[in-house]
Image 1 (cartoon, rainbow, N blue to C red):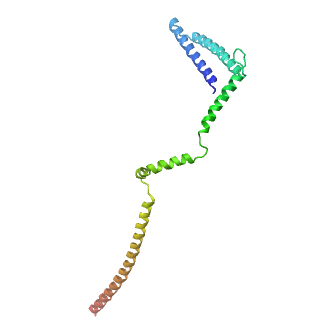
Image 2 (cartoon, helix red, strand yellow):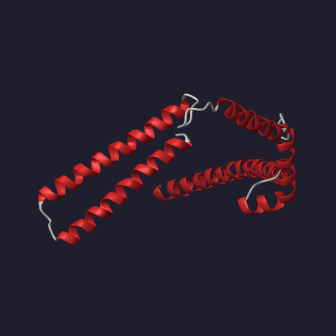
Image 3 (cartoon, rainbow, N blue to C red):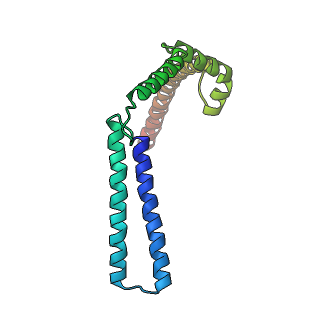
Length: 178
C-alpha cells in the first residue's frame, strides 16, 4: 500500500470512531435504545463515511493522474524526488562489495578467534583429536590381533590337554569295568 492509501484507511477508521462516539453520546443524552434510533444512526454514519470515502478516493485518483486537488501538474516534482532517491540509493550500493570474499574473510577471522571456545562449547573434534583416535585404534587393533592369536594358541593347547585327560579317564573307566 502506498502512504496515501494508508492515510485514507486511517481517515476512514477515524471517522468511524468519531461517529460511534457521537452515537454513544446521543444514546446517553436521549436515553433511547430503540432499534429505530440505532438504524437511523447507522444510516447517517454510513452516508457520512461514503461521502468522505468518495472525497478521499477522488483525491487519490487525481494524484495518480499527476494532478493535486487544485489541478496543477506535479509530475516534475515527483520525478525530481525519485531521481534524488535514486542517487541516494546508488551512493549506498557503491559501498557494498560485489563479491563475498570480504564477508567470508570476516567469518574466517571470527572462527579463528573463537575456535577454541566453539570446539569446547559444541564438543567438536579437531584434526589432532582424530589423529590421536586413529593411533589408539591402530594400537587396540594390533592388541586385539595379538590377543586373538594367543587365545587360539591357548585353546589349541587346552584342547590337547582335555583330550589327553579324557583318554586317561576312559582308560581308568575301562580298567574299573574289567
